Amino acid sequence: MSRIARLFLCIVPLSLLSIPVHATDGVVLINQATVLASGGFPYTITQPGSYRLSGDLVATAGADAIDINASNVTLDLNGFAIIGPASVPQKNAVSTNTDTPIYGVSVRNGNIFNFFTAIYLGNCSVCSVQQVLISGCYDGINVQGSAAFISGNVIGITETGIRAPYSSTVSGNTVFGNLANQGGLAVGIYAQCPVNLLGNTALNNFLGNIVQVGSGCNLANNLAP
Image 1 (cartoon, one colour):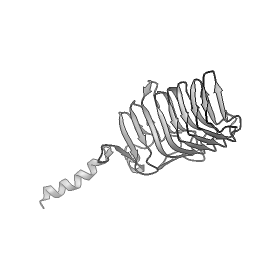
Image 2 (cartoon, helix red, strand yellow):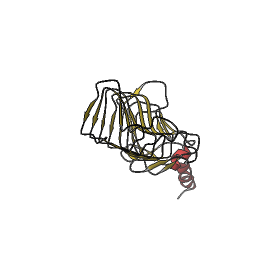
Image 3 (spheres, helix red, strand yellow):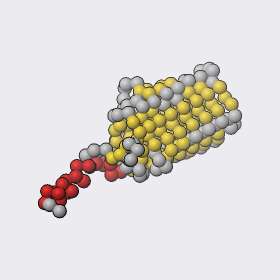
Image 4 (cartoon, one colour):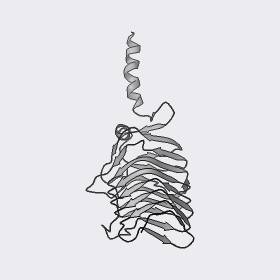
C-alpha cells in the first residue's frame, strides 16, 4: 500500500466524527457517543427526517436530552432508554424547544426515566407519542397544540401522567400512581376537551384518574374509577 493510501485511511475515520451517522435505511442514529461528538446535550434536531436511538442516553444535569426544532420528525427510541440525573430532574427528555409552531412530530417505542417532563411537545400539532414507558418524572407526556395522538404508553410514579390538547385521541394508555410530590396537578389524564378518551386504564392517581376541562370529550371503555 502506498504512503498516500495509508494516510487516506487514517484521515477518513476522523472526518466521520463531524457528520451524523446514518443507518443503511437513511435513518440518523443517535447514541451517547454521537451526542458527545456533536457537542453534548441537548442533541438538537433541526431537519425533518427519521431518527433512531442505537443505545441508551444518559443526560447531563441541567440540559434536555433531545430537542426537536423541526416539523415532520420521527424519533424512534428503538427500545432503548433516555435516563436523567435522578437528583436534579429539572429538564426534559424529549422537547420541542421552539416558539415556531411545528407539526408532524412522532416519538415512540422506548423508555424514559428521571426528568422534569419526559416528553414535552409544546406548540406541536398533529403530533404523536406511542409505546413509551415513563417513570420518575414530574410530567409524563405534555402536548400543547392540537390533534395529538397518544397511544399505548405506560406512565407511573410521576405527578401528572398525560396532558392532552383539544381535538386529540388518547387511547390504550396505562397511567397509575401519580402523586402530588411537588404540590402540582397529580392526575392521571388531563384532557382539554374535546378529546377522545378510549380504552385507557387510569388508577390510583392522587387528584383524579381522568380530569376533563371544558366540554365535548368522548369517553369509551376506560377503566378509571
